[in-house]
Length: 236
Image (cartoon, rainbow, N blue to C red; front, side, top):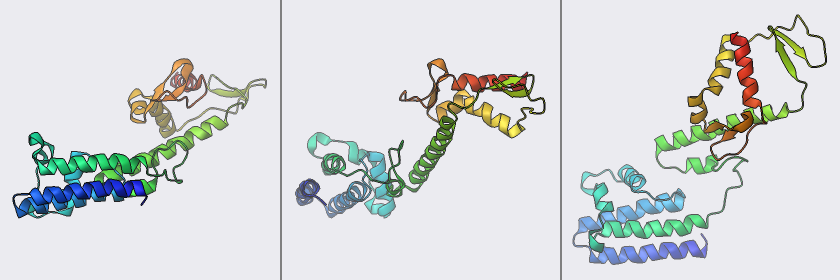
C-alpha cells in the first residue's frame, strides 16, 4: 500500500474513532465498526467505488444478525450532519476516490477491454460477478469474430448469381452452389437484427460500417450492406 492510500485510510480511521466516541449506544458503535469493515473490504480489497446498494448488499452478507442490520435510509439521511452512518460512508466515499485513482492498471487487461478477470473475481456480489464475467467473455468472443472478419480485407470479390458462386474475373462455377444451413442463416439474420446489435453494444453507421456505441468503427465500409445482400439473395 502506497503512502497516499495509507493517508486516505488513516483519515477514515480518525473519523471512525470520533464517531464511535460520540455514539450514544453500543449498538451504534457496533454498526459503525461493521460499516467501516465492509467499506474497507469493498474499496481496499475489491477496488470498487462505493454505492449505497453495494454497501448494503455486502454488509448484509457479512453481518446477518438481525440486531446488526441497517436500513438504506440510515446511510442516506444526512440529519444535518448528525447521522454517524452517513458521515462514515462519506468518509469512505472520499477515500475511495483517492485509492482507486492511484490503483495501477492490471497488465492482464487485453486490447479492447476495460476490466480483466482478476478484477472481476474481486467483485463481492456473486450475481454481479457472474454477469460481469459473462460480459467480458462475450466481449472477447465478439472481438475474435471481428478480428477474423478484418482478415478477409483484400480477398477476391465474390458474386452471387442465381444461387451460383463466382470469383470476379473468373467464369462462374456452376457446381459451386452457395448453401447455408438453417442455423447458419438464422445466425446471420440474428446478427443484423436491431435488437441484437443493441444488446451487443453495436450500431450501424454511415456507408454500412459496423460501429461500437462510442462510434469506433469495427468494420470496413459496406460490410453491413454486403451481409444484407447475402440475406436478400438467399431469401429470393
